[in-house]
Length: 119
Image (cartoon, rainbow, N blue to C red; front, side, top):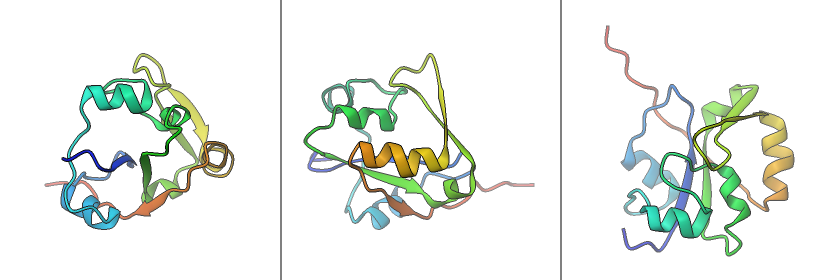
């Protein structure tokens, strides 16, 4: 809210986003979504196109990376290349063991709840 910390959360598509759960695991008292102005300044992109590729522009390391632990069970990950008209597919191990070190980022893994499926 006061724009003192920013987080990029990468979630599994079957996980539910619960602000309280994310904030507790991130060690933040309150989370809100970044404004378009902040997204442009930090990642040179806009809402709907944010991805880990934005870390190329975050040279001051103002954004921390949170990754849903469920993604560790996936072989491939898909991200927008900072524009939501395309997608890039990466092997999970390439992303974690090659891309993130090149971007000088160490993720914090968090546990997200599954989407509740009412029957």
